[in-house]
Length: 161
Image (tube, one colour):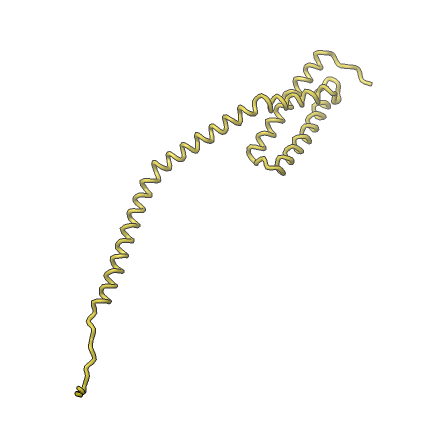
């Protein structure tokens, strides 16, 4: 059994793992925001996050931990960092992003109204004139057909009763 590390070393390990858990939760949340969070995707992101957490925990333990291997408090600190992101900052970040997206959509809508509506008005007036001209041509063509002189047949014989 390995000896317990000094209290200051345990504190340093806990802070490192808190930060790793926080960064892992940020990455998981960002992945969900960018790629979607459906049922299957959420399960996939969670599995990837757990795999990344285990790799980060054992990598940290082997490389920088004072004990040299994973201890319960490092795993607990990583979980606490993840929960700190979930309960503390995630909701605020989501609200800010929603507000930014709403503001962007409002801006695009206003720009569309300011730029597209006059262009569309010109286009529709042009097409209305074109339709009116086409209708006038059709009307004239129809009038020409109906105003043609009707030629009666010449009867060569006149029959009397």
